[in-house]
Length: 114
Image 1 (cartoon, helix red, strand yellow):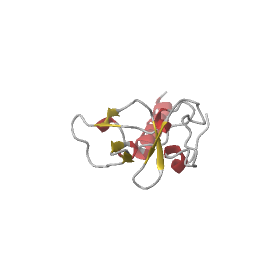
Image 2: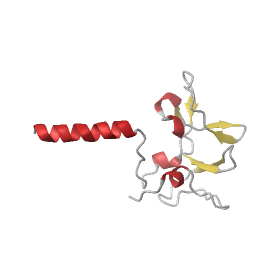
Image 3: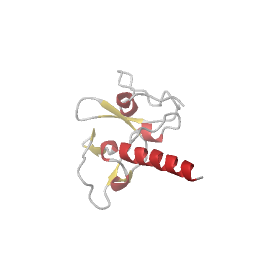
Image 4: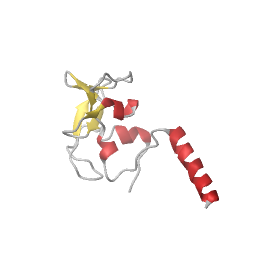
């Protein structure tokens, strides 16, 4: 499994061609322009309850543009996610560093007990 750096993980395929498939897994993705004149490759035909997605991974389509809104989502609000979160050929990023650190600490504690 190959990993990419943080910027490339969320915004991949920024060249002028905007391929319709992920170069890593060859599955389709949906290139959508962002409000900051960039491109985000979203998971096609998939939306998720916004409260289950980390804030910086929530994308909303507004008038053909993908935008991020880090405010607390409204009940029932749906959002889109980057393909990179669902890509089987990319390692997931460390979304919550405090939780990752806590899990590592708990693993060390558990190994000492047994």
